[in-house]
Amino acid sequence: MPPPSRGFPRACSSRRSTAPYPCTRSSVSMSLRLKLIMAFLLTSLITVAVMGGVAYERLERRFGEIVEAGSARNFRGDVAAYWLTYGSWEAGIKLEPFTQFVGRRRAFLAARGAETDTGDADQAQPLPPMRPGEFGSRPARPPYPIGTGSEGGNFRPLFRFTLYDPEGIVLNPRQLDEFGMRRQVTADERAQGVPIRVKGEIVAYALPQGTANYSTTDLAYLAAMQNALIWGSGAAALMAILLGLLAGRHVNRTLSPFTQAIAGMHGGVLRQQVPVRSRDEIGLLAEAFNRMSDELARSHEALRDKNREINAHAEKLYEVSIRDGLTGLFNRRHFDEIAAGLVRDAEARGAPLVLALADIDFFKRINDACSHATGDAVLRQIALLLTQTLRAGDTVGRYGGEEFVLALPNTDFDSAIILCEQVRQAVAAYPWAEIDPRLSVTLCVGIAAHAPGQTAEETLKAADRHLYRAKAEGRNRVCG
Image (cartoon, rainbow, N blue to C red; front, side, top):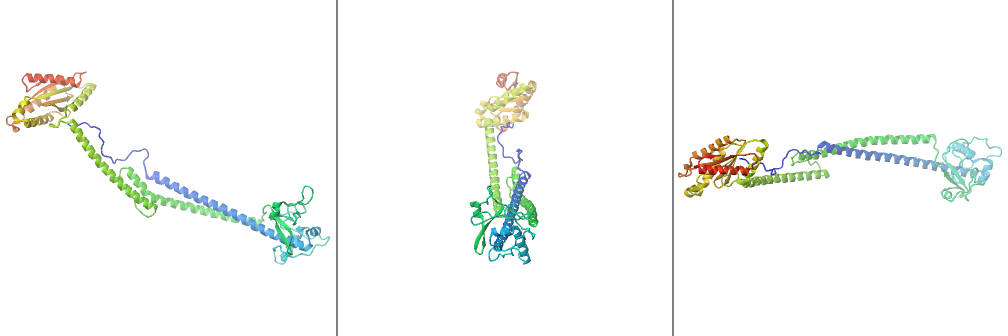
């Protein structure tokens, strides 16, 4: 009969694992692709935004610097011409306000086809001076006043300037200090002033104040540049999105073979190969993955073969430990384990159980008369007859020497008597002369039905008593 399972390990199975977090292509490559796309997009959009902001800030600053430089150049030319016309600032403001002079000068330069000059003595040209009583006879709308609150009417100047002499005294008539005196500029203001020269001599310094008040044309120009930058940034952002999608698709196409191979390995097929399409880092990674897959598959196959070998040896050792070496039947120790389990099962289910002991009649005479080899052949043949006669659910073992033990589960006493009688008859009818012409072999069988509360050992003792009674009554019989 086959031995019960002992729970020895078997070879590694290639069945798909039911791990709670399987490695699938969608859960890996899609999330990685989205992460890469988001990284590309954020990087590109931030770059576009920073580039557009910096470009607009630099454009506005440079435009302001150009406007300020042109306005300062015009202002220096106006002051130099004013100085040349009247000989000094103090003489000029008595005859004509500076703002009106600037208006006349603009008309004069326009008539000559010029817009600006450098403010140097060689470039600035005096105008016909105003005579007393002519003040206000000509309209004056200069592009800037001198300082805050100066003359000139209701207009928005490009820049305001503070004009002071070489001693640092402000010349603007309305920039007075708290005592009603003309204010003196600070050291920092003096360091920032731009000199105004007349005939090689510095007559005053000009200091711009505040930020530019752009004209409508200037504001329209800045708005057009801002609109161009916005459209350019939008086009760059759209291009970044398209490039991000293409890059993500390329990365997904590159990593897809890896994720499919990993999913296959997770499913139990360890030998996986991914195509090597390049010699870059991805190509080197593919080659390393292929080598790793081959080595892992070979190691797994070697481990599986070794495991099978170990299992085979373990099963052989187990069979050796529970079998009788001569007859192949269960040995006494293992039969006792089986019998104890049958007793527990019978009592749990209320099922009948019969145990029996069989002994070869005059076995010592067989050994003495025919040899021990013949005796061994007799033992093997009786073991074969027992296994052939008993049923599939019955258990038979060699109990020691010429004794055999039988366990008949789910069998009442009367049925056990019939079955054991069949065993006795099969042994007596066997043609023993084929082994040795002098042989004639018979059995004595003692049987005992298991009683509730009894152990297997107690039931076997009862069967042993009936076996001795069978011997005492003439042998070759069944007693119970």
